[in-house]
Length: 627
Image 1 (cartoon, one colour):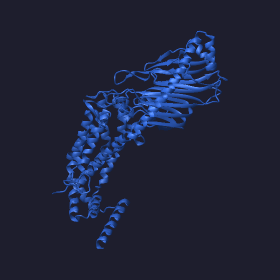
Image 2: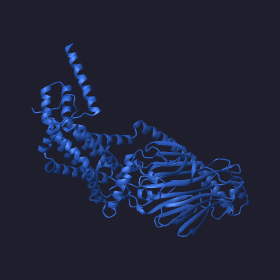
Image 3: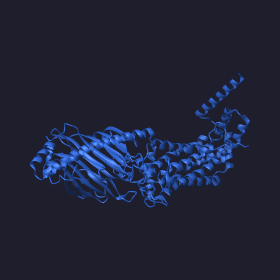
Image 4: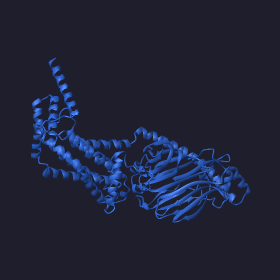
């Protein structure tokens, strides 16, 4: 029976891509032991938090009742309040000492700020909705708190338990809300919120006035910010994969807490932090770096059928430094979309708050993929923009792919001569390999030359793998049967859940898998070995592996990503047919190979070393046979 070779070039590329996919997905999946340990820690933490919160709520309720009595000018209640709060008891005697909130809004952002604690209790984005068509609220129903902890007259006070006095004003076109925690009309701690027109970025500051001798600045003062991220998408597991705490510290360095389980970190000189919730971000930035910040992140999603409300619980405890015997911090808050264009326009390295990929992958996204897609989506529907982006990337990579196809053609033409070498040397595998390498080097048809172009395409592949699931421009954009290109498409719901695959059927991954299979049949199937060689892997199984990866793992990924790979592979198939039938002439390539073989071939250092090693191995083998 005639023996046939297989083309390893495309096979190596697809196996590498498949391996990378498995590695990335595996790294995102916690082990069973880790899940159980995280579950136990989460339950313990939740129990402790519940008990602590219960005690605090009881204390706060008592204080609130006392303040209400104090408002009625009950001298006994006022004295009790002074014993508990010292000079800040004055704040409990004001009309604002009641559970109330003040609204401040612009064209894109609606905020409610509570008298109790002086912090934002609702932040709603006016122009964005959830998967259920409900307005997106980053903060609501007590999922967030901002607390200033400080010492005053031998007491440890927390601003979240105290009442601020609100006042609304304007600064040009800006709307200003001042929240003051008072010890008198001229002495107070102020939270100042300034909302600009059409902006998600808020000017925010914390300052103290006239509190010399009241606020003990020699003791540590902390600003404690906590937030539990709400789910806004149809798959909380998928959404949670891209929810992460990111921060900048020490002159522009960046770090991220773990995506899974619990993680803690303490850093110095922190300039900003992002409590990211996939497509929406809660950022706190400061002009004066925080001296030290303790970060924590807890994954709240263990079972998406049960854990349907929150993705992660974030916390940052910031050590504040006094200035001139008081507090003075000018900051900014960003409550809005995790959109690269918006964040990048603010500067301050906020593009690092997005998951664009590390190293060269992030560079490709920042300077090629994002600007190109932004331009296309500016005048084209999102789905058409993806197809056009695919075509342009294919054109950009066409020189590299042409070299890959040319190498494949050369290897195909050399196949009869390689078969002659095998028949000539029989079972002498070392000699077969040595002579085959000589032939390939002489013809300029080394398998590495076909493999290298495939490797050069991997950075683009991975860059797109990170771009599509996080591209805000794709959120809730429909195309054909997909109602949201930033999430998976659904053509059928399953009555059961399949591990790794899910409980639904997505069509775009199926189409992409079919396209990959056709491509591999064209490049690998036709050159598949007729008989399985001893010691070699099952090549048919490997050939089917890449389409299987696409079919299974991409079922829960952004449909825009699957649309890209489907389009890309269909274009690749078309290019291959054109090159094969109209560009590459096998006879001309064969003639060039024969001409090149006659020319003296200068070996590079690596090739000489390999030849020497193989010759030495052959000599040792002959010596052993003689013995």
